[in-house]
Image (cartoon, rainbow over all chains, first blue to last red; front, side, top):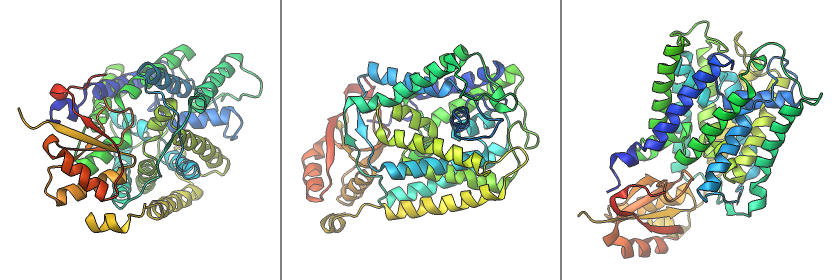
Length: 362
Length: 82
């Protein structure tokens, strides 16, 4: 039978989750922004800023964690003989969804990874975010049940698979060469970072573990809704338990809503922004964290989604729709509301038609 | 020993869910599960059903225009090999 504990709570997922929880707290201790440690959306946004894609002076830095996670996933996939090129089924849709997920994350101030870490640190605004996130995933799961599909990915070749890892290596080279066109924040979250080697090591380890375990923030709740199967949800639980324990030990744990670092207390928009992130991520087939892993093992759709996230981050800051501890700008609210509608329309219109014969039988 | 289970995988989530509905209608003990890690590094869904129903399942899915990307036999003890 398949319903033994290893299938419901795979040890590898628990290990990967615990590692993310502990390492994120250690990264904060080593200099990463407080109440963060690791945030896929924020760090991609920081890289976009460092490359000059946006001009928000406080959030520009080449973050080694992002390329390191991609390279860790590549390494694990290559060792496991799971590196396979796969072209995107609908790259334009993945691009748009990626951009919208990023916009939502920048209004909440965190992707699902940081939301979970914020929760582990006692930031109760993340609980409001989690409620919205789950609601968005539920809506996405309903669309899946009604036939939504991005389409069939086509098996591709190996060379395209290697483009993202090469770009990741390129970013690391820029980090060490420090050419003049790279911006680095003098103050704000973008000025805070651990030693490059600490970030690199943590990112590589997390990338390897995530590829082996398939850890996914959206997948955990989605599979619970669709199949009543907690196999990935245990990873989130592990992050919260291990993260909270480590943060308590290091004195980072602060229970409450007000005055949490790099967060705001606009409950409605925390809720709706994470609903957009949850919904968009289900339609993409994974949260921003999972997209890095999928792209690392050769998924072209995930590559398109990541490109969308960079573009979304750049536009979000240039257009002033990203939130700050001061609150959510009106433009941010409009984009979150519009984003939810766009996701619902895309999800509804991309239902695969069943053949008449299948409909009759099914 | 209980009936060994077979696993069917699909190209899309939607086909898997359609297959589950179709088989359950025919009173076959089919159940959606996450694709086992030993089968794939992806996180899609798969369908398990008793091995004794294998030929019936195959006929039904073929007749229903549902394309299966593969049928798999669960390894002994269901502990996941690498």
